Length: 313
View 1 (cartoon, one colour):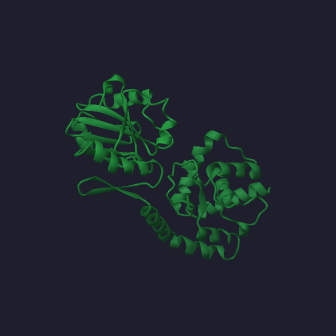
View 2: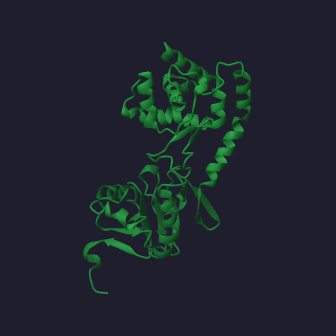
């Protein structure tokens, strides 16, 4: 009975907080209870706010409420419950390291302090007034955390007078180096046409210039991380930034050939790594007829191009 009672109470709280009906269900209620570290027999006044990732949330639910979610449910919990909690302003992603990319497997979440104080007063005489005060201030809280996240963004100049902000952390740190260092050394006077972003897939897109070169962009998921037009040589340089995955393998090269098959510019494939030690992990995967650039040695290129470059200096 404690289990059912606690789940129903959690659902009532979600209704009071104004969550959409799609988030007023058992899954969201159980996720809320896990984030508050509340077991069935515990009072709401005992709620706490540990740092939890999605898998630990699922483990807490299984151990304390007897509901076991399949591993492939992980994304459902993240996208259909946790995402909405974050948007509502009472759950903070990566408070321990705001620069951690949102798609990192190390991502954790924590209940916001004022929201925690509110929920600790549930089923008391103070609840009604505290709820009104909290709902009045929640927009201010959301703006504050949005500003803090904005401060962590990586500014990148993509064209004269135009600056974009990339989500912090992950491969975007390497993408910044590609734009600032690789392009300066190897595509001087080049034109940046596309930049992916781990947080916002369309970091930057010059659709008009790509179409002028015969390339129609339809699905961002098929695009490389960076596309630069080397104007002097009429090359489209397609760059993959590798932090945990994404080297230009033979399979990936074929995919890119399909996306850029109508290009009137020659295609150059580049895999970018931050350090040489990172490249070592992918040596057996990198496709022939491609290039490798390492940010820690920015003035050099490694050619996987066979006899084309064989000969004395």
